[in-house]
Image (tube, rainbow, N blue to C red):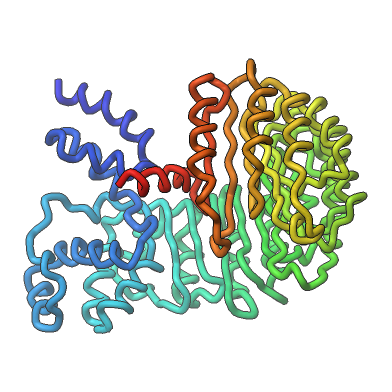
Length: 481
């Protein structure tokens, strides 16, 4: 009976694997629930590791050491007070993500002794360990730790510094053949050339990300991707490609192009006239808009998501108009769009709403426009278009980087015009450094609650970074305290 019980509970808890708070609340229900939840929580214990959490985590890790090693700790440190009880579970055995970046960081903060560092590393790197994800820091050599080859052999995800240690990279190149996702980042001038060999050795690489810069070696590394041209489905870069390798990715589904130096003019000529017939998600920031327009025109039939940010000085109203036109003329199945909206392009924006009947969410970047034009945003105009022309599937809107809130009368008119449709969700992302006057919050909350009861409004949120942290709810809680 208990086996059947576990078989039923496990897929339920798996659905909650990103909701650590809810999972943790299940630990105290009973022994069976605890035995199912602990391996899920410890699959990747490194997520969102604050300094406080790192100290707690290190206490648990040290508790797995031998009595002799823990006694040595006791002679040098007095703040690991809970590390001397044997844990109820072998938590480390449940880890499938080996984040050596976090582990080395904890060692640097709390333990500077090389002997203790090696004891901790051996808990994670050994012949019995079984990992799918590996996060490799810069300039650390692990090749002498017993069992390292078996430990790394089944890795499917690798994030590593472009200057990864030569000996460690040799181990990875020799043993890792099943990497599917690869993220390479560098804060230095170039990448280790041997990364190209690591890429070539993989059987089925489908995701590649370049974070930050590489210079001369980028050509070599990009050319090594040609072997995987048929399997790569995700490509991300923070610098313009050095070759035309993107033209070979015939099955590419997600493309992310970020200009890490937006105030440095880069040509991005290697994406000019690019055609990607399988593309369904396009994310771009400070990329020449004419090249993106060409890409949308040539590859837009399957696009369902477009996120585009740009430096306001580089894009004219005419450019923005052409961008909107390219979308509604070539992307009939578009569901999600984030872009900078300008009031002067109202007619074309309305055509976008009419032509793209599968839209589910629109994100408007308002901050730049507000600063350039030095005038208030025309909320009434935008709200009127949304109420009049939004397709039935569209009822979620986000307005980002705006320091200008719509007036209560504008919201009231918008809600009245929206009545009879699916309840609307409005989200306003605020700038953290800007001071917001809370004097009008009481009237705003009363208005929102009234239209929620009428079934017009589903959500109305002011937030900074996390949409789940509603500033209005925080205000209400503070007021009622």
